[in-house]
Length: 359
Image 1 (cartoon, helix red, strand yellow):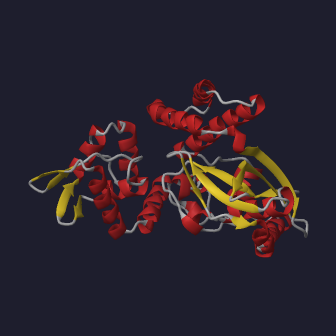
Image 2: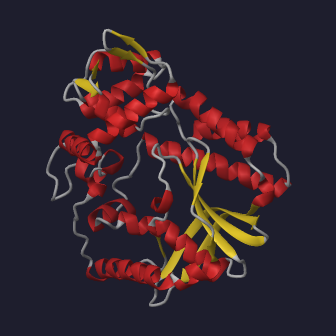
Image 3: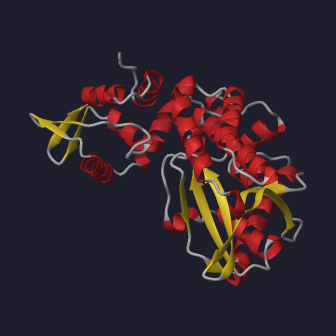
C-alpha cells in the first residue's frame, strides 16, 4: 500500500487495472508526443527558474543552453524546434524572478485518516495587491486549449489552494490560483481571495481525497484491480493496456482503440461552435480571399483554432461556413502553405480517416 498519494496517482487510479499494469507491474507506459513535449517545456522552465533564483539574476542566454540540452534528452522532433524555442525565449524575456517565492515546492500534508497527500507546486509568487500581500499559486500547462474563469479550478488546483492556505502560507492576506499556458505565454488567474475563504473551503476537498485514498487502499488490501471504463481509455492516444489487447473491457486491436479515440473527440466537439471559431478566425486575421466562394486563409494548430477543431475540419469532406464551402483538399493545401510539417498533417489524417490520404 502507498504511504503517500498524489493527485496524479489518483487520476491514474480512475482505472485500477491500468494503475497496476503501469505503476506496479511496470508493463506499460503512458506517453505520446504531446506529453513528452509538455514534460520537456516544464523541465526547461523549471531549470531556468531555479537558476535565476540561485544566481539572483536573469540571463536569457541560459534558457538557450537549457533548451538545447533538454531538446536532445527528451527526443523532441526537429520540426518542433523553432516553435518551442520561440516560446521559451518569450518566457525568459518576460520572467521576473524577484516575484518568485518558491519554485517546484514539494509538500507532504496529513489530511487525517491516514491520508497523506504529496505533490509539487510549479511556482509560488509573492505579490503586493492593493497594499496587501498575496500568494499566487501557478501551475504550468502546455495544452492547446485555454480554459478561463472557474474552469481553471480543477481538483488539483483546489488541492494546491487548501495546502497553501492551511499548511504552507497561512500567514499571508490573499491567495490566487493561476494557470500559465506555456504554449502561448499567457497567465490565466482567478480573482484574488482572502486566505480565510480557502481555509473555510477545506472540508469538502479533504473529504474528496480521503474517499479516493480509501478506494485505493481497498484495491491494495483485497489485491483487486479491476478495469473501469471512462474517458481515460481514449485520452493521450489511448490506454496502453487496452491497445495491447490486455484489457477485458476492450478486446479491440490497437486500430479499434484509435477508432474509439476518434469517437471520443468527435463527441466532444460542438460543430456550431466550431463554425463560429472559424468565422472569428477569418475575421480577426483579415487575410480572407474570396474567389468563386472559396476562402483562402492560413490555418495552423497553434493559431486561432484548437487541435480538435483541426481534426474536425480535416475529418469532413467539406466545411460550410455561412454558406461558403471549403473543400478538404483546400484545407490540407492551406496547412501545407502555412508551413505545417507533413508529419503533423499525416498524424491528423491518421486519427481522422480510415485510410491515409496521399499528400
